[in-house]
Amino acid sequence: MCGRYELHSHPVALALAFGLAHPPALAARYNVAPMQNVPIIRRNAAGERELVQVRWGFVPRWAKDPSIGARMINARAETVAERPAFRNAYQRHRCLLPADGFYEWRQGPGGKQPMRIARVDGQPFGMAGLYERWLSPEGEVLDTCAILTTRANARLRALHDRMPVIVPPDQFDRWLDAANHDVDALFEPPSDDLLCAHPVSTRVNAVRNDDASLIEPTAADAERAAPSTAEEPGEPELPLQPRLL
Image (cartoon, rainbow, N blue to C red; front, side):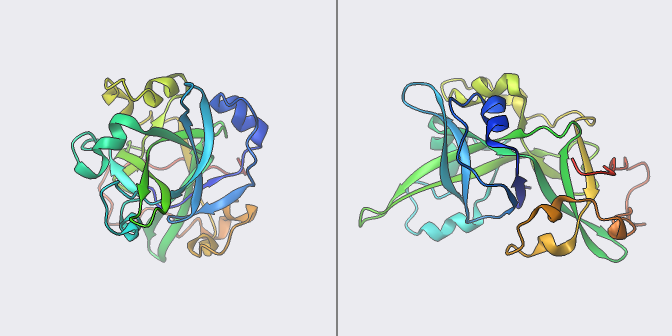
């Protein structure tokens, strides 16, 4: 799954990476959580990419109560085309969520250790998403989104059996084109050498903490991040990143 992530790349770098006409007005965020406003990249009516803010926590158009969004932060890529909650958005409203890394928690001898997962080269990446607009009977407008997930690759399976769908840059247009339904190949997990992981401070557990120190490797927690004896033999080790990406 994906329940927490971070985005700190410079706006100019994001504009270049995602083909935006102008650098977005974004502040660095190191602890993005569900039910917060997040930036998404979508196609506008002119077919150009634009960045807008929506709430993370998907609310289907037919929902009677928008609080359902708190339970719909992720959508399984394998069933997104058929599930009533996501079917319309899959056919009409696809987006990318820019990120520099996401977090998962690994069970170790000393408890759950937060781990930051990011690209080995330190570049930002795009997570596949869906967005939708909900209208209340009183005319309230609420735009929301969900992150698509797929099965974890071999490297990340020790953390969780699911991970975000990461869309390669040369496939951004393919995903954003809602008329293109030949996108199943994009749901395959990335190669094992794309991502690395390192333990970070347990301060990331509290949403109120949001500063650059959250993504720094925490040597004191490395022992807690070691594989537990309950892991299956032959489980691939996560590559630890010894320095700040």
